[in-house]
Length: 186
Ligand SMILES: Cc1cc2nc3c(=O)[nH]c(=O)nc-3n(C[C@H](O)[C@H](O)[C@H](O)COP(=O)(O)O)c2cc1C
Image (cartoon, rainbow, N blue to C red):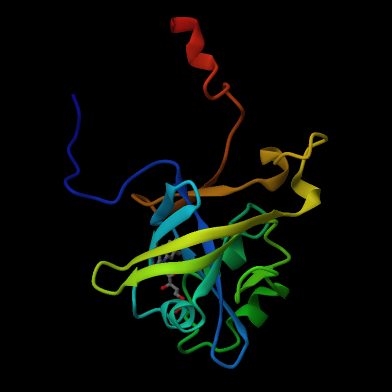
């Protein structure tokens, strides 16, 4: 027996993205976004409400960054999803994060968030809220890479959000190998 929930934006695991942009005066801003994902090899699509300071910023600069929220930074990551740069100009100061300008696009990333997609705006539709970005570069701090130079998910400790109850969870144990675990059934 299943229970129906109707048309809801529920998927699991849901990403917790932190979108970094510059305000008009050059100060950094960030917001939390869960409604998004990869939509092409070099493309990400995120629903960003046009009322957000972030939307004004990426339209003006044509760029934004997308970092993975982590267990260590959870409180600040949630904060940037509650406070708006529209009425809290010192939003990033409150997080204690250190903004660094991306080498590739006109947007900041934050030292405390070790994995970032650096993106150029392809399109933004205010009616549908759809922001489509070209992934120009992915930068990952060496502190969360393994001995083979690949991402170590246990070191990164990304979080996921369960939007039915509005709870954050850490990502769990490795349980298989993509493109390989299923081969036993072939
Ligand atoms: C867990 C979480 C997920 C969120 N996901 C989105 C989202 O996908 N799209 C969106 O427009 N706002 C989302 N928000 C709300 C924005 O992060 C929030 O309104 C923020 O204050 C906007 O900041 P800004 O005005 O400085 O850009 C989310 C907030 C939280 C806490």
